[in-house]
Amino acid sequence: MIVKDKYFQIVDEVLKNDFSGKIAIDATIGNGHDTLKLLEVVGENGFVYGFDIQEMAINNTEKIISKKYNNYKLFLESHENIDLIESCDLIIYNLGYLPGSDKNKMTLAKSTLISLGKALKILNDKGIIIVVSYLGHENSKEEREAVDEFMKNINQKEFKVEKREFYNQKHNPPITYLIEKIGE
Image (cartoon, rainbow, N blue to C red; front, top):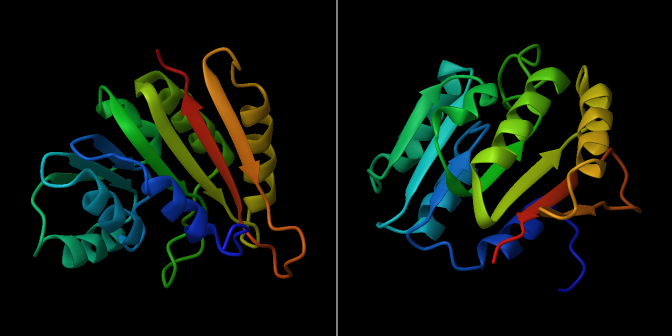
């Protein structure tokens, strides 16, 4: 299928590129599904870092990745602290809240913009950032508008930015942004 109807199909399309041996970051690990995908694509010679502010997210992620992988490190930290990592090749964000948990704990525009600013600085040439933005939770509209404005103002001489939306879907489908650092 050429035209996608689910955000994870867009993510999976990006992850089909060769990230073997690369460094990846799951900026909002949630239940660990993207962390697992990142570990699969970087392979045993790569490394994955994960960030989340909720201990439940760290524990859920550990459960699904620790039996098969050891090339990762999870931080009980906000994605705002993404610059704990000096450089990387691939970053993914799923903005919003941890499904099945306290909906009052969510990503917010201020910390997300700080994180994205830092992510641009640590991204290696030809690196990719994937941002999935959801509506439907408190503060989500403010966050999405802020992220959208941020994306419009990224330096086009350094980065390519793409926005993918599902126009004819009900129930506030997510928007997926792709950022690629232009390299030599």
